[in-house]
Image 1 (cartoon, rainbow, N blue to C red):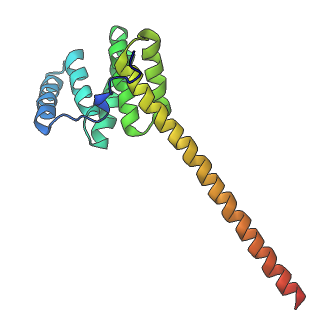
Image 2: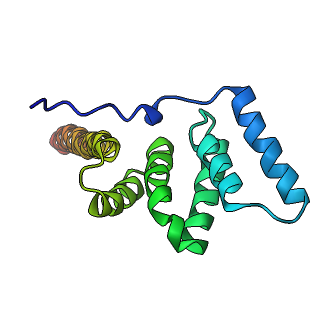
Length: 158
């Protein structure tokens, strides 16, 4: 049995400008008519989350959160893209929270498992970088203290 999971391709793949524009036009059309269907809103949010632009990703997550709150029947399908959106935004703890909720509902979801691995790697990397940063800062402080002590000792001898 292979241990490699299918890659969460959505973490890297983006829609083309034209593809996203089709979704945006449909969303705007319905918005102007004062009735946006949940499917249109979801499709547009999905496209925004897949965008390489940070502002688009933020808007996509916001729209997905609106759907998640307002439409209990659509929560499950929002979970993966909320996790993905937060992952792409660098909000790894939020990404993990949404992905965990999805994994509780669908433990065999290979895409969610793969995204979970990506999230865990980013969290671990941040954790390790934090420790390295603290070690460097601690080392610099120790060197500074030794130098200061030497200067003080030298000044008191004169």
